[in-house]
Image 1 (cartoon, rainbow, N blue to C red):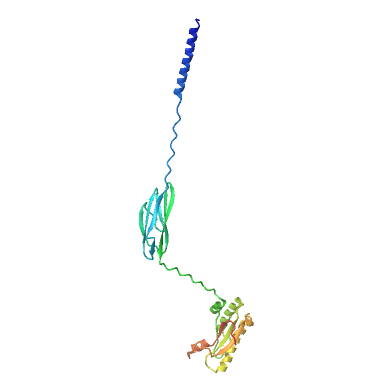
Image 2 (image 1 turned 45 degrees about the vertical axis):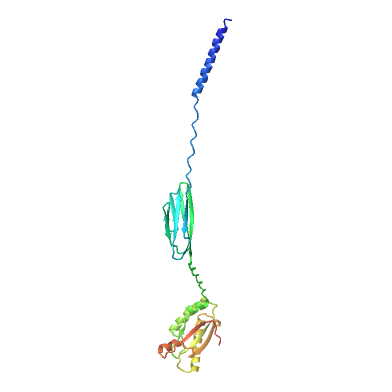
Length: 253
């Protein structure tokens, strides 16, 4: 029975140590730090753009008005460029135009449109189609007549040069057939001039054939003095009428 008090003392000591250990553990525990709130997301820019009036006659004006929020950069196109966050301006478009307000800011980008319709603008004239250049056009632009001396049918130097030029053209356009008209001035009889005109046309035909132009492509005809190019009674006018004239295609005799 004497050992019982000693046991109680030991048990009390053990319990005291347990209490001290538990108290010590509670004092060392540290709570976790609080989670910081997420950063604020910038708001997207918003605004408006209006045109008043939205329809005008040619030569009249309209007023563009705009507003914005959360925008640091504003641009109004076409042609107006950078603008303030709020404002208005007068425009006088020559044709119907859509205006665009572009807003930019930390929260992104946005855009707004307003259209000004111009009534009574005549339509632009349609471009006239250029007609294609035909072989006859080229013929009339390129082929040269040959001229003769009085009462002569021989090929003189200037006529030789003209006919050589013509031969090169006919060689480059082998599908073209043509007529050589022999002409005279009005001196002499009609019968004589018809014969002289024929000799002149045939002389030019032979010259071209010698240069390689097929004779089957060439028709000749004489008009003598019946179809003058000039009607004055002067040496210059007579010279104008003494010629071989070239016509596109084959004339009917």
